[in-house]
Image (cartoon, rainbow, N blue to C red; front, side, top):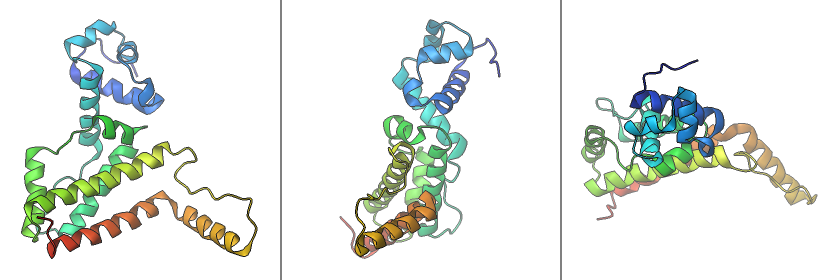
Length: 210
């Protein structure tokens, strides 16, 4: 679909997301964006300072488009919101090719101030100390980014690959267990880890780190 010749920052970011999704992060360049928009590369510098600057905007736009569950609901339990927020972040990263790499390298280091106030406030009202509330969100976001990163970049995909040279009973049993796990899929794997992490974070209510 051709883009209009009038170029602005939003058009550049949209073109960048198209290229990212088609070719991956390594192929995303200012030259490729300029070609997609039908302009010369210097024209982009009126709107972006550098590729680093652009990638930050692309990461923010990916979150704005697909990370839709960033604010807790009224009286929502903290466990439910941490899980919902993590699933939303994962969905955003998996919505584009190399989305997890993009977020790990260029994503915002902190949420918007209004989102942060709502998020931390929920955990504080639930009994978390302020620093532990922030640490809880850091732990969940890092787990989520790491899980999505492995799913998108692992050499053999996200499934565990079991060596086939062993044929003894114990090895064959383990191979069957690994196959059962593979059948459950990466979403199940993510959910099990997320649930365990959230349960563990609940210990901070009785044992604050401060």
